[in-house]
Amino acid sequence: MYSTYEQPEFDVHDPAEIRRVIYEAYCNGKEAAANGRAADYIPELAKADPGDFGICVMGAEGDPIVFGEVEKRFSIQSISKVINLAAALKFLGFRETFSHVGMEPTGDAFNSILKLDTVSDLPFNPMINAGAIQIAGMLSNVMDFGELLDFARAFCMDDGIALNEAVYRSESETGDRNRAIVYLLKSKGVLQGDPEKTLDLYFRMCSLNVNARSLAQMGLLLACDGQNPFTGRHIVHPGYIRTIKSLMFTCGMYDESGEYGVRVGIPSKSGVGGGIAGTVGHRFGIGVYGPALNKKGNSAGGIAALEHLSHLLKLNAFS
Ligand code: GLU
Image 1 (cartoon, rainbow, N blue to C red):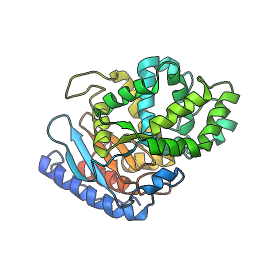
Image 2: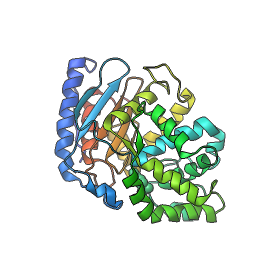
Image 3: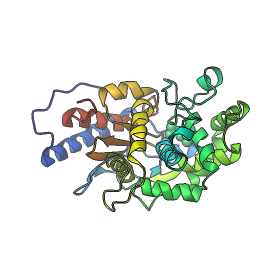
Image 4: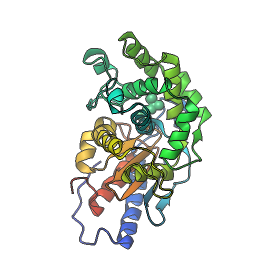
């Protein structure tokens, strides 16, 4: 899946070159999508068109650069874990948040119960299901879904975000593994909220309808240290943004986070709906939609496109 590239000979900050490389990344992503398939363990997700692919790159000045399916709405799925973490940090603080969830990658699948049962009573990190459910439990004590939705809209700079009812129903009807996680947390005495209320908030947040543009905007807000660059409004404190980006880097791409970190090196979070949100230094946000997933649950086209962008534009955090 991953390949290596020659180092570029052009000016990686030249807008025309940036546009050309983004177009190439789009073409690579569209082609690589043929190697993946849409998630079907949540029945509603299986209805996605695996041939869809779109990319949006957005900086604080100028128009976004977009190719392909960037307006189509799809469910945010695990990318909501970034929003939940940001809300927990903002409304509960760093110390309280990390009293109940860890900061370590697991190397296990996103919905694994293994280490939660055998290694640690607290979930390893907020980017896996167990950690995000734990955070949803904490949030359920201080805010309702409507308030968290308002926060999600501000965090993605997109007032069009709404609940996808069909996905929400599909998730709650089939989410037995997540039900197992919430009750395992309860049995250990570490769950912070009521189990059913916690799960409901978690499922609703996974079912928010976003598009590649909203994900690029989320990445841009992170690149702008938590400030909306268009309105000047501060959404999340810059210190918390550092924490969020670090966890995206180490844990954001499921059990592919290590390899993705080496080969792409952009703090990112993916979801099984086919989205990836990436954030590049203090420069721009990247949003991708490609519902054909690879074996690890990441958008096959998204990974190909982001790898191309990273190499050609030298976007690796350690470049
Ligand atoms: N709602 C999905 C689940 O909990 C999210 C999975 C994902 O995107 O990683 O299984």
